[in-house]
Image 1 (tube, rainbow, N blue to C red):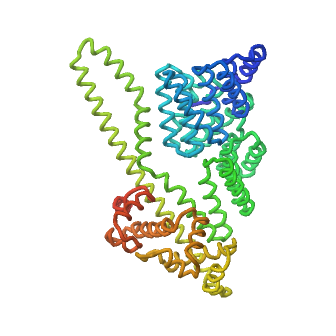
Image 2: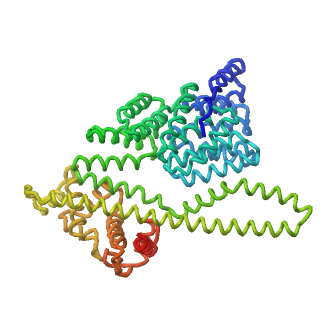
Image 3: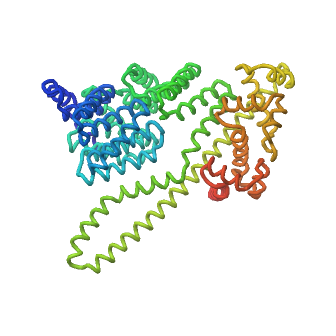
Length: 575
């Protein structure tokens, strides 16, 4: 499909028109509401908040809950979401209560849109975000709000953008086409931007470039904020084509606009710039950029792209031969990504996708049903039953297929993680075989801890010895292992031990030990040649109770140990 001619409609004239109205009528609530939402589209969230607050204050003055206060909550909620401010949830919650009490589906569309943005931007919960967006589309259907329906569709494509899933191409192109049908610059921009990234994921760079060029044109024409996202994708496409220097120029161009960039786009630009620098051998410079990106995710409460940054950090340290650091970051990545494999959320996603993809067909069936009921009621009943059976069968098949894909993905990820961890351990072991100065006796260090407060140097030393105790001596395999025993082995006390574990891993002692036990269980179960009974596996890695082993394994890995082993065996047979 060819990219259409660039849209000529802009947001700026609409903003100027509403500001002119407000100049003559300062208490015009409709003008305030329009300006608040226009600045949301422009991504100027500070301005959106300014007009949202004015609308809010005027609403309380006039006791206008149905319009002014309702839409002020919606506008403020969405603006604060995009700024990473958790107070957004209070505004969105109030807006939802008002919209439902007034049975205002039009406002409810915007509320669900804001809730979807909140769960994706603040909590990185893409499955819940999709749930809210699809709820918003249903509300849009009820009130025939076509424009917001397309905006929600665009946000659905943006979630696939964040998930790096090219399955979002269909939604991106639908947003793009509907944007042209409605002559909406904002919708065309979202559709073109997301379509370019989907084609990038599919390695079809010739199709990606025209869409990103159109997105850039509309962005400049409307003076949109958050321009860093466009230049990040530009750079990624050029980098993939082998034009490294051209890619770096785009990354620098995007970073120069950081004052107007959303946090996630700052992080994406820094990560991609670091990847380009690492390929040039400038790993330390790349690491500096990556720590800057991590600081943004923490300071501005944005988890998006954090995992990409951690993975790039591991690669850079490995490139520099610092394998201990590389392994540490690889483990941190594994800890932060384990929660992604939540089967309940996958189930919700599957059901929502089926619901949306079959919606047009269902609408046609309902229309035919109304006609046939007047002529052949019995025949229509049979058709309805058949359709329901087919949909149920399809839903069950789709759920099974997605669950099978999920289990395969979990096993492959852990097998790859085990392989890489083993490689890093071998390198670390070879380095440790080289002559080194003898370390201070453990007992003397422990006595110092008992006599004085822990300094940062002592904390690091104690944690390194703890890690060595776990990794080399594998004391976690002791079934009756206690905090007191580990403290004795390290020559310290249980208070210092708990403090170090908590500060270094954000875990308590039990969680820390169980993490090693589960990782060892994963290694055993990932070997298709090993047929140790599960009860023996649990005992071997240190668990006293099978129920505890099952529960912790399920929560950590995402599937029960029996299904994990079955999937490993199945993959081995099909290899």
